[in-house]
Structure formats: structure tokens, C-alpha cells
Length: 376
Image (cartoon, rainbow, N blue to C red; front, side, top):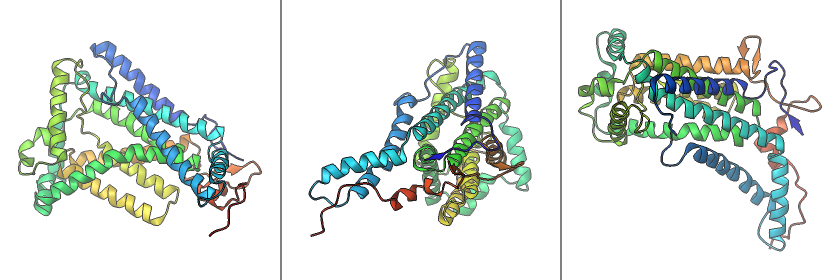
């Protein structure tokens, strides 16, 4: 049996994630009261309180089912009995009560942050009506020696197949966050690493929402649409049109029609990718995972500027935000030595490193199963 050591922390699990979520919730309620804006469910088709637990439960099934069938062995005499025994063993080994508590604690804190973040983002135009796109565009041109960074990328990559490629990058990013949360809460047995990542994403959202209120922007695709007129129709262009319609309806109905999701400074696409990259470095995942994460980070930077979602200064701010979130979440979760963050692994009750808590450990353990039939 392995425990989640609290050395260097002293706070409950996911404490900072809960604090970020509660802070966003308080801001949501305050903005709703002061501006007379209704609080909305951020997911109108499938409510998030159903969708995200379903993602977690699906991830649990993907964790348990393969291990059960591998442990049960080939079909044959008494196979169903072996499956039942293997299932009980896998659940006991991989899903003790402590890990259920860890996963549920994390997903509830994460969903609170998500739902409140979406509402604060939607309310930002009512709280602070000024738009700062023009100053940010001027900063971009200063950084690019008088050139528009999106126009530079269009000249480099062209406005044909590259638009479809970068649109695909954007689509992958949309799926990446919930999948990465499921991995952090369900598939990993490094609960310190999982808590660190989920907490960092919560901080990303809290700081991102604060910046959306302080520096409202709509992004180049809306404030300078002519620059993107030559791009072909893609999933992203259709999404941009839909988001603008939602924003117009939300502003016209004072929030009654739903939520608007347009805000550019800072880029949380870049911020969360920076968080992912730094976490996979800190927990020393496989080299190919680290290379893949940093490669996708670079593609995300290019895609957000090329497609007009963000100014380049949004990218810089997003990268800084994501890095700070990793640092402060590492401090809060006890993954630190002094003020330097690093993964502090779980330890066994005997004080030994919990190396057997990795997913691979179960496969190396002998399961108390009935005798398997001899191969034909």
C-alpha cells in the first residue's frame, strides 16, 4: 500500500486548485450581481457535470479493462471465473479508496474552475467595455519591425494547405486538455504529478480570466479581419463565425442567450501548452513524449498567430502565465526543494520510493488467479 506523502506542503490535496475555482466562482457571482448577468451552464449540448465525469469514467474503463483481460489470459476453461477474479484484483491494486478520492477530488475542483472560468470570460465585456486590440497590434508590429506577424506567417507558409494544417492543430488542442486531465487523474499512479498538473491548469484558468477582465480583446481575426480574408474555409473559420455570432447575441441580450467565448489576451492555448511541456519535463516522461509536447507547443504558437486567434504579444503573455502556473502549483503541491520546483515522488509506508505505483508495476506483479488452462 502506498500513500501520498505531504512532505513540504501541509495543505490538503488540490488546495490551490480549489482556491482558484472558488475565487473564479466568487467573481462569477459578483459580476452576475453587479452587472445583472445570468450565470449559465457552459455546455449547452451535454452539460459539463455529465460530460467530464463521463470522460473520467471512460478513462477508468480504459485503465481497468485491458489489465483485467491481460491478467485473465486466453479464453478457455473457467475463463469467466478468471475474469471476475482478475477484475477484483485489478480494482484492488489500481483503484483503492485512496485513488478514488484523489480522482474525484481532482475532477470536481477542475470542473468548478472550468465552469466559473467560462462564465467570467463571457462576462468580461460587460465588466470592462474597452477593447485593447489596437495597442496590442502596435506592439506586435514593433516586435516584428513594422510587419504584421500573421501576414508574415501567411507569406512564409502560404494561405492554402497550411490553413487546413493549422486548423487541425487547433482541433487537436481542443481535445488535448480533457484527455490530459483524464491521464493525470486516472491513468497515472504518480499522484503528486497528477495533482501538480491539474492544479497548474486551474491556475492557468484563474489568471487567464483575470487578464480577460483587465485587458479585454477580441483578437486579430475579428479586429483586423481583412488580413485573414485570403484563408480558405476551414473548421476554424466556421468556428470563428459561430463564436462571433454568440458574442453578438450575448451582448445584445445581456447574457440571456448564452455565453460568449471571445478573449485573446493572454493566449491560454499557449499557456496550457507551456504548462504541459514543463510538467512532462519535470516528471521525466519518455523522451518521445517530451519532444512531442514541445513540438506541439511550437505548432500551437504558429497556429494561433497564423489563424488570427491571438496577437504575438498574447503568445508571450500566455507562455509566461503557463510557466508561472507550473511554478506556483509546484510550490502549493509540495513538489519543490526550497523555491525550486521538482517532482517529489510518493513514498511507501516503509519510506521507500513508490516505484511500484507506476502503471507498469501491476503488470509485473503476480496476480492470485485460478490456474490457467494449458495452451493448445
